[in-house]
Image (tube, rainbow, N blue to C red; front, side, top):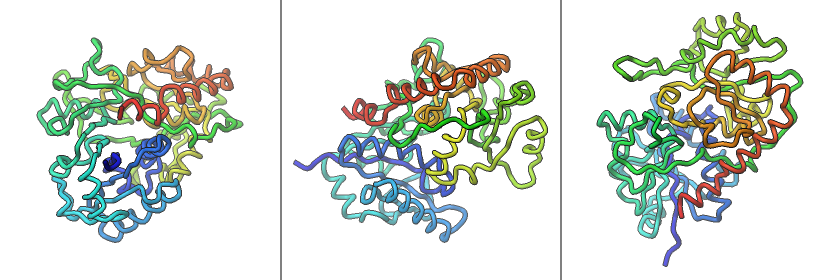
Length: 384
């Protein structure tokens, strides 16, 4: 009998050449599968981009280089689709990394699909024998499912989410009639080295300042942008002398928001400069004392229990995390190195405590990543 093939379905890594953190999310899954000794193929869907064919070819080269440099040569296939479409079918795709014949042969034998955030759609989706939906953006996906949109709920056998509170009495995320199992975001601790803290304490985060597609919650529109959630905390730099607070956020050219933030005492850097590759991303996390961030969207309002992949990478690097309260702490020990706050006063006190107790909290942060978020351990549980 042929060995089982694990397909890691992804659709957001190859198209974002300068997103080192973006690529790092499925990378943890691939390294976990490799550590388990499983036969797997990272199946990356790359839709044609608006930048055009030259950019798409550069995306393919970058993706291939990153796979080789992380010891994943021969473990991937990019499905390039031009023109892009919501429906996925092999007949409309070109194959890179592996041939169409090899992928067809793997699909003819025992196989499992780990479909990250509904990256692979029908009709291709129906070709897999066991289909596991892996939800990496719980409030977003559960909301659109509740609005009647097809987000994969009709085409998978199992449903797993990093919304750790899914189904809890105080969690407002719609389950949409599905039986959800929960898991912490994955990390390969061996990939993240623990380094000494910076001479001047500094907390940072990476993300998008603005966000579109606001949603209606409790009869009102919710601004789901990171910028909106940071507003109550903008005075923190002035209140914490001796501690640097930095934002690696995307802004359009000519936007006056970075200068406004700098005038308030924030450091603002370009994420494509500091985290343009997986290696730069890991170096940038390790250059900080920890993460301070807010949570876009309605994860706090809905008590989703959402913990970001970026936060887990900070923890694995021995960097404590201070973030808004989405209800994660109930799943962790009190001394985890992961702190949830609700008010500017709580944020100020917690950041000062992290600086004061950094060596002990750094060790706890690393231990939390190893105990709760280890990729190979979670994948073993998920795959059975």
